[in-house]
Image: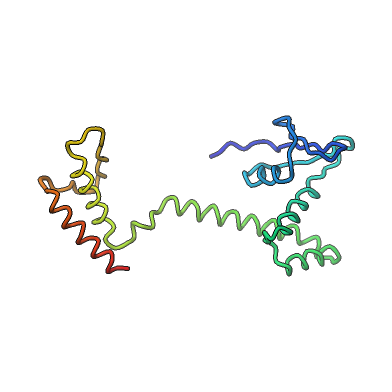
Length: 184
C-alpha cells in the first residue's frame, strides 16, 4: 500500500500569492487541484492571521472548473446546496455528502481492483486456443534466431506440438482468424 503523506501546507501571503511550504515555491489554484487529484490533503492558511482558508479555495477551484464547462454538479444539486444553507437540513447535508463520496470512492477502488485481477479477454470463447496458437507461432518464428526468448509456458498449459512447420502454423492461424471473424 502507498505511504500516506502528511497534509500539504500552503500559505497565502498578503499579496494573495500561494506558497507551497514543501517545495518552497509559489503555486496556482490549478497546482493545488493537481495535488488533490494525486491524493494529497491540502491545508491553506493565511500567513498573517493564521485563518484556515482551505474551504474557500477549494470552492474557488470547483467554481473555476464549473465555469470552464467541466460541469460535475448538476444545477439541481447546486440549488439543493444553496437551500440547505437556509434550512435546518444543513446539519445533515455535510454528513450525507461525505458518506456518498466515501461510497463512491470505495466503489471505484473495488472496480479498479476487480479489473486488475480479472482478464476480460480470458472469458472470450476460444481465447485459450488463440493464446496457444500465438505462442506456437512466435516459437516457430523465433526459433534459431538469437536474442529472442520464448516465454515459459504456464503450468497448466500443454506445450506446443514439436515439429510443426510454418505452413501448418499459417493454416491454423488462418482457421483461427476465420473463427474469430465469425464470432463478431
